[in-house]
Length: 203
Ligand SMILES: Nc1nc2c(c(=O)[nH]1)N[C@H]1C(S)=C(S)[C@@H](COP(=O)(O)O)O[C@H]1N2
Ligand SMILES: [Mo]
Image (cartoon, rainbow, N blue to C red; front, side, top):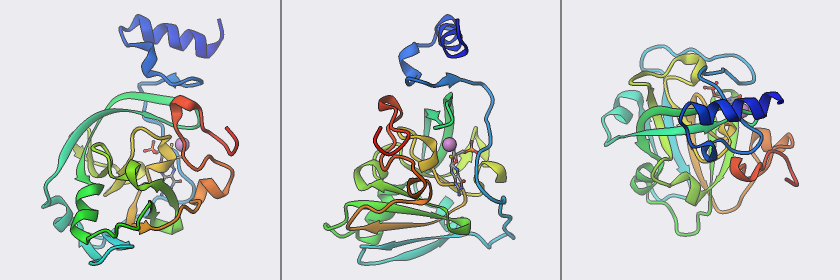
């Protein structure tokens, strides 16, 4: 039995529904760290996020203002395109939907571009960015998100490959057309559904 088959059998033996593991993925208990470039550090009060683009009332929030907004907690599986999946991760944050509602999003908006530190971007259809589980997250596992995992604040879009979940999130831009983000310009799929194995262009 190969590594992936064995991991899938072990997943089932642990009592998980193996259907939760998308094709070509393996389950891990670890939380791998994956990003390009350096981990940014912020002085207290330095971080902020801008909600802008196709909206009538763009605004900027600092960390204190973000955490003062109504929040939700979710428990969800995550799937990295490099083939690891992790089950039952726990995140807390503000729904992207609520931020765009506050900004008065235009009816012409169809997509969202997430902007992170150092110019990292990820594109998402608006419906995916505004679902119940699409969070501007500031806690993981009931504590602050570690800098290596995108703290103080990252995007979490659990139903798409995890490259869409931009770490060190600094902006959410509503757009009226789709455009490729960082990895999408480098050959990754524009949408990235793990259950359809949409890893690369043409998948
Ligand atoms: N800003 C930024 N966000 C990013 C990345 C990155 O390189 N830069 N990598 C993405 C990828 S490919 C994955 S799998 C996840 C990894 O998150 P983790 O390091 O917390 O596991 O972050 C995503 N968000
Ligand atoms: Mo990834």
